Image (cartoon, rainbow over all chains, first blue to last red):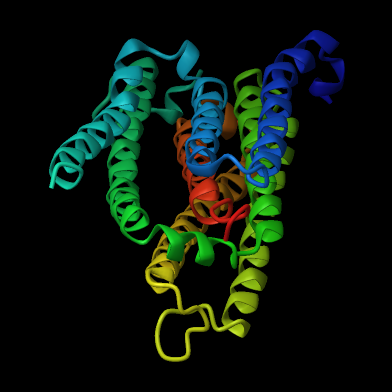
Length: 98
Length: 211
């Protein structure tokens, strides 16, 4: 079996970064779940969304490999969030100024 | 790497790889916009019916929601490791991780089914006999069913794509190392995880303090 001959560094290379990222994601999940029970008034939603954005960023940067991807792909990946941002700005200028 | 993996109209594998990942990212951007419309609607109605949304959010199952978040995040880990293993030609590891991803995805859907059953038993479906009286509570649950339902369809689609990788690599394990399908499937699977990460605070954490 070829894989049995592989060095430990190969396996480390495959597992280390994703495992560290997953650990961070689990810690953030625990934090956001616990913070949901802390009375912060209107602050609860922004805090939980901030943690969600960090988690999504970690998945994008490491699991989806955007941190090491070609600039063209990073540009394509940013198209969705950018258009959602524009959607929310235009929606907000209408709704919140009525 | 063999030209057996090369498909028209590309003339070299590197260019094909670039086209597949770029095309997949453009597709994922359109998927993000699909959910973006729902997020926008949720934002407006949450502002209009703040108390109703918090009261309704308190009724969703935080246990199922949190366990399912952990399951999807773990499936993203196994999918990421599968891709790295395939690129390093550790094909047995890659296949095992794909199977783990498939198993976790199925587990997610099974738990979602149990959660839906619990929701229906509590009458938390908009319409006649809805148990919550706060204004906007039914609208919250309309978003809940639509958002989680569309997400579950995406998980099902992702599972079909992962299963295809498992079946194709069973015939020829080497296929995993050269095919661009693994990377495209992985990107789609991770997006499904990202969408759930955003849905979790909107649907499961709302109203835990003051619901």
